[in-house]
Length: 457
Image (cartoon, rainbow, N blue to C red; front, side, top):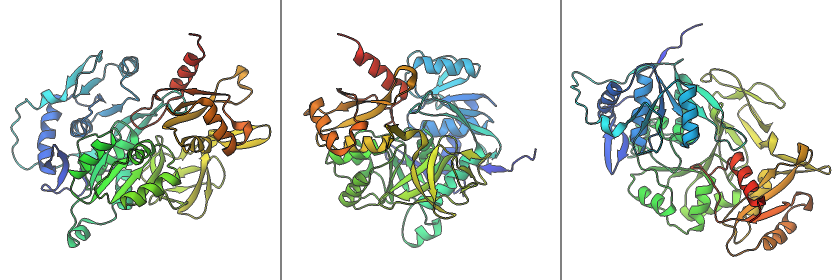
């Protein structure tokens, strides 16, 4: 097999350009490489690293040091003790790297903050390390929103290629063009964790491969998002999710100028996108992709059609659609129904498993959830398939966060908006939903909630 060429850890390296902002202080690419050398000296060679760092700079250093040492980053689906123990057993005692206290963390482990205490003389010029394109750089897990989390292998060629294509699409001005217009580098503020593929691509990899500057802070609440954006130089990009955008809009939080807002992890409703664009005078774009392939297409939400990233294409004309691209190591089947419009554009019709069939009628689970969330007084909610005997019938249930409404109120509104065949059999009011850091709900959590709700007392 032909060995792939090496690809620089930092594309278009410029020692004076910033790569990240930590507590208001810009860290240049050269400063980053000097600190990277220190972290590399503390990590094993050609080994697995479970990257649990929450601060984006700590994550970036651990990520880069691991692959520069010939190793692979493992990005777990969560930080539950049982999940981490399973990974420890599966990968034969990988090194767990954190930047805060994590209970019951398997050994061996280190806190990256301690590595900065190491003394390491640096002589001569510091240049970015070259990484083999076929090196396994990441093992990323799916969120579990459609079943058990599963591992996906990511090589450096794929990660680098995806980031460059996203950079070309989402930050279309070259360095020379930005300088000519008096613009600086694009600065990214993100509400999603670096351990998620979307967060990894739009923060860590955009900093390394698309000349963007990322904020080390990881804001979650609307006020925090506004505050971090205010501290961030322009042009600014906010990387977030439909859940966060809905929360920001409903909180009436005022955001400073945002040049672009990027959303992913779930479909964004047209209504929310239009509200965000009008209120914040910005442009809202979505990214389409999957853990298996990474990001593969984008669109402006207020426009229906999707646009494949450069050189990404489908190889067949019926479901399941197979996509291919020069940066992918293999062809990837998609689980979504598409309507190809041209070689570069398509309509997304929904996930194949999203379609409900009842008494000869069809409905989209995604559409039902959009109608539930659109009810006045509903703060959060989900309609989901619940298990039935022998799985012969598709029964629906709903959990709803709506302090001012009753289950009967919600039922009556839904009855006016959806076909009675698709009304949830049960509507349970809850204080909150167990959404993860990207706003997703796992199938297992919903099953457990449903079981608990059925228990007497």
